[in-house]
Length: 258
Image 1 (cartoon, helix red, strand yellow):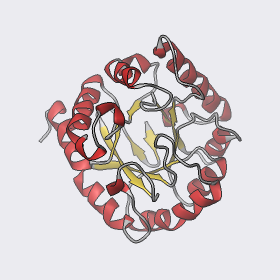
Image 2: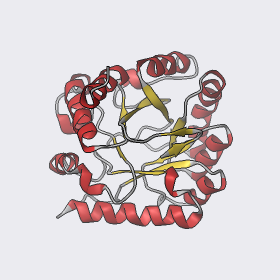
Image 3: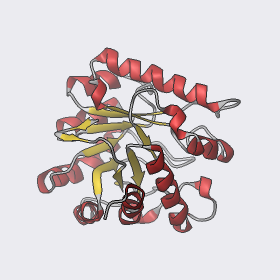
């Protein structure tokens, strides 16, 4: 897969979560224009291959903010990161206005938790700017029955939207959407069968410190790292995590790298 000038293949790479929000569920991930550079510096040093900026929390029962608010939170940190670091930047948004702003300001990829289906021409916005996209599964109502045909059906439809808009097939990855429209049992079922989502596009896994692991978010690092090991064994291309160093180390162990 290509993101900006970088190619990602034959490994499991770490995407570092940097939240530009006051309400993300894991408080240590919350940054602003005054703290973001140090956070990115640490993430890159610890092994992050991609930075993922989020300007709106999508935790359970989150309070939606407007596209203008997302842009306001994102503008200065994105400018600072692109000026100071040579690292691909993904922006986590489902608003076309925010995606257009971010890509015009130098972002390389859009990470869309609604898989190009929230509204507006997200696929067209991304295609016009020759950017990359992560397409995540989501649903308005909780899933019931066999989850895998529903998830892969959604993802295949969204990939078709991307391709028809002109997004390069090598600029697309897909995410099963653990924690979105799924209960705890379904999240575990999805994680354990994640390779079933492989229909020719690289996979991204996002389990970091999520409620499926139980307990408090501060106590979920070990379980997250174990899920990263599983992802590496399954050949998942990206893991999106809060704790870069620990997850990068686990990946190296699986691949036998020092």
